[in-house]
Picture 1 (cartoon, rainbow, N blue to C red):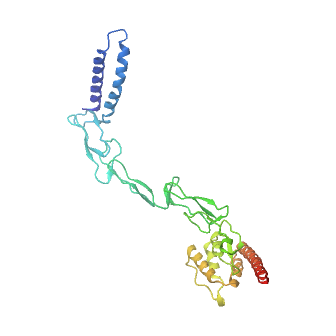
Picture 2: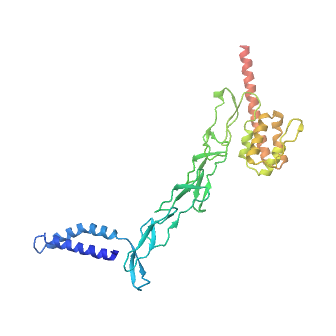
Picture 3: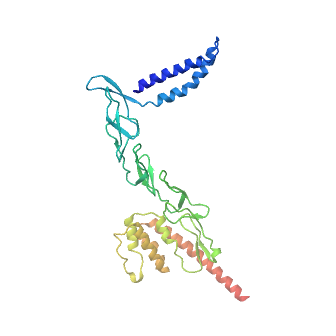
Length: 328
């Protein structure tokens, strides 16, 4: 039975039921008052019966030339054979790896999609729906580019306010209120400046957004230097020249730096700082100036002067206190 025939049949049943219900109402000029509510009760039944009928499409029978109204195939299937004067549409299930989401009259199912670069499968393809993809861990979907991009890393001086998801990029904020971040990270938030007094040390350099408070016990001071090179960006060629010219004992040249990337160069600087003497540290601003980074050389010199002054004052005060205590 076609959908049109089914609809006519439903309408016939509907009006037949209405006529039967009318007979239940008392005979009076107000019979319609009784019939209308009863008809309204039947409307949902009519609607559901009609909506249950499959959608159709028109097709001309190649044998007879007649225009036929054929049923479409439901989701998850395709049209294997069109209807004819003596048969209805023949549908078949979609084979593995294909699907149809809508009522259709296509001759083959659609091929399941494949997730793109930096994507993973969120929902597998079924006969009735295509696969759904999402960005893999550490990536988010950029609508305007139509692709997954790596979640941004917050630079030094900024911490993660909200970690990135598959839909949104990382949200960073500037470290403030005695907090800092000395790394570039997509996960780390700002950290609190340490208290020198709690560790029984002297504060010789106030913490900033990109480095911690520098504490010392009247010994040499250099722990902020690796963070200085991380925070102040420069091109890789200049950074390679700086690492190549780092002062060393006996004036020996540093190992070759041409093949080193940013991470390896910063690692080389950290390693050098850990073993550098105080005299070698004081030569570092001159190295920066010689490679054309004059402004950075001046900034580093200012930091070193500030720490040296604070350290000297703290140590002098500490020595004075020791003298006073010994005189007691």
